[in-house]
Length: 102
Image (cartoon, rainbow, N blue to C red; front, side):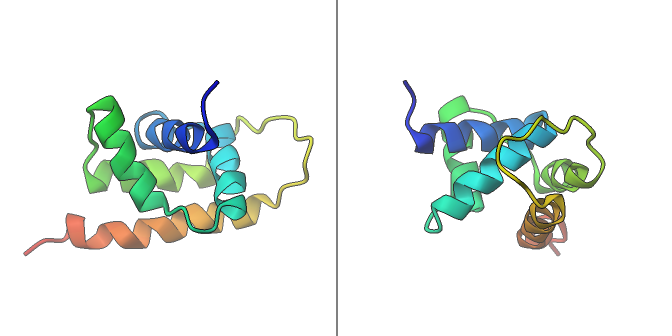
């Protein structure tokens, strides 16, 4: 059985390469529970684990898909989708320097 950290790394990898709304929601709940875990650090760990890396522009596009994906899972726990969207759209701010290098 995988640890919660491994699950978070896997969800981060999925968002970076093949985003699904359920992975955004799962990872959001995990990061709300584990406040000391940082999305960017999970992303680096996923690049190491899977030996695959995505550039900041593609990652930004994938993160923005949180607003348009329609595969909303049946929820047991109540979720404010706007908060999930705002969280991941906020993560795109960290990508600007990697996209707009001079």
